[in-house]
Amino acid sequence: MTAVAAFTAMTMVACGSDAAETPEKPDGPVTIKVWAWYPEFQGVVDLFNKTHTDIKIEWTNAGTGQDQYTKLQTALKAGKGAPDVAMLELQEIPTFQLTKHLVDLGKYGANDVKGDYVDWAWKQVSTGDQVYAIPVDAGPMAMMYRDDIFKKYGLTVPKTWDEYKAQAEKLKTASAGKSFITDFGANDGGFMTGLFWQAGAQPYTYDIANPSNIGVNVNSPEAKKVIEYWEGLVGAGLADTTAFHTTDFYNGLNSEKYATYIAAGWGPGYIQANAAKSAGKWKVAPLPQWVAGENKQGDWGGSSFAVTDQAKYPDVAAKVAMELFGAKNTEAWKIGIDKAFLFPTATPVLESDTFKNKEYDFFGGQKVNEVFVPAYNAIGPFSWSPFNSYNFSQLTTNLNQAIEKKTSWSAALDAAQESVKTYATQQGFKVQ
Image (cartoon, rainbow, N blue to C red; front, side, top):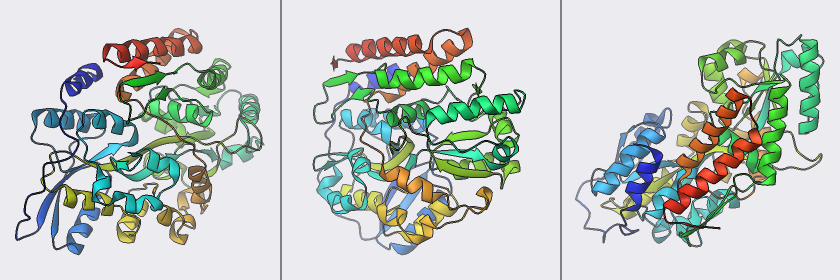
């Protein structure tokens, strides 16, 4: 199913935002069905089931990302077959909330845990006292760099994007063009959006409380500043354009092809799993800034637990959503951090000595969360649209075409803007 078809199919349905009146509980434990694709999640489920005699979680990995969303959309439209609790990436929450398929967890005590999360993260899942999901993990951004390459070519860690470009030029000359400063994976809309976010761009203005209106500003001056900067690096042969998450990309991380990797908070685990040969050669530094001395940050990725309107016992499902990776669930987070390499959103976990002082052998023993935690805390507010999959597809398609044909990246952003505006209008939104 295409993004357009999936969204159109969903908008034809308008169910109530809360499950039916909670029926009487069974004598035995209440079974709650959960869909999620977190790594090492079976251990978290087993832990929950061992510590709760009144609830039993049945976990299904229904696919990663869009694969799960397509199945979930189908089940919600059919009125049966959906889980009680579903993992949703933060950018997908408006899509499912728009069609009234998410239970308001504020009615089941979710606002009691609001204080466990920083403001920007909580606003990603709520509007006013209405709460549509519980944050789990996030992706604050930073710059991973090959310490060995930096030392080999006499590079200094850049603090601004201007300095980053200067080091890229130095690297190209010193390595005789064998090394790039980094790779710009134009196949990942989340990566590019995180860079836009840091620069202060707001591609979409959307309020769940006023769902008929949407602002579309994909080609804002802030976004164009980012795109034109990277177009300059690529055009000068300073940055590569290999697709992220591919064998060629991983080989580049393992070799001396890339001196840095602009990564998210889940990056330490990701790079450890996919570039094992480069172990011990990496370090982490703050994301370069557009203005020296500022601390502007963006996010790349993140997820939550939402309760669907098919939950028979929404109060119990809400409890599961709040507790699976809750702020006080230290044993679950031990699995999430040490084995699944998640970056937690719960402040008590983030600020714990265990997390902040965790040393990563892959990074030469560096306490990398001393970089990622301040970045997370400095992230500003950001809005997603209720058709984000389509937005990402237009951004990546138009930009990849510009890279392939060597045409203007700025024009590619203009094309994405017009495409998204047209699509939003076709779906019945008033575009502002």
